[in-house]
Image 1 (cartoon, rainbow, N blue to C red):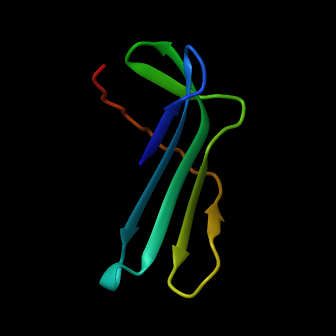
Image 2 (image 1 turned 30 degrees about the vertical axis):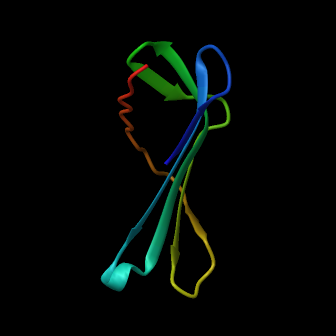
Length: 76
């Protein structure tokens, strides 16, 4: 997971994980522009989000028409 603030109320989030038989599929959820409207709630900004997957030996494929809910817990 990569998470970093890009402004007072914005951040970039990238999650990557491995799944599948013998852990052969890489997945990525990239949200380049999270906009925080409350301290506990954020939405994807104008740049949207990308969900991709890559089976072993194949090219990265981006999924379309996907909705994802992401909850982030953090401590200052």
